[in-house]
Length: 162
Image (cartoon, rainbow, N blue to C red; front, side):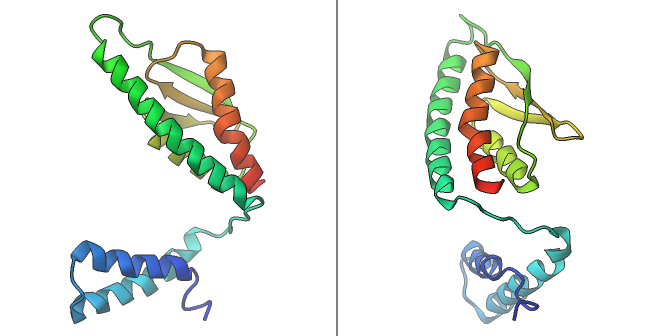
């Protein structure tokens, strides 16, 4: 069974997503959804040779809640900065953040978190995964931002994956 469905949750998700996006449960769409649900994980399984090992599942819930709060707060801060753009231009800059996180799954999650939060853009990751170059839309104190980034996102991801 594991051979046919290497990722059963992904297969089910793709099946449901196909039907929802097409707004139809016609026989043709059901056949396409089944094919997509079976073939996509089978064809993509070699691209993900290392499985993620979650060490602390409760930290995931705390991290999701924290990211949700930060998304709302950051949206309001970016909105405020844009509204007063003519009076006080934003202090955009690139920030080098030293990373202790080395797990590939944790780094992927960190990149998604960075993408979701308004005002930050993941720009580059050093080849040895030791430094992240991040662009910040409006930054007052670089040292405080780095400490906030590491304590709020990196440490919980290390708790989850390492």
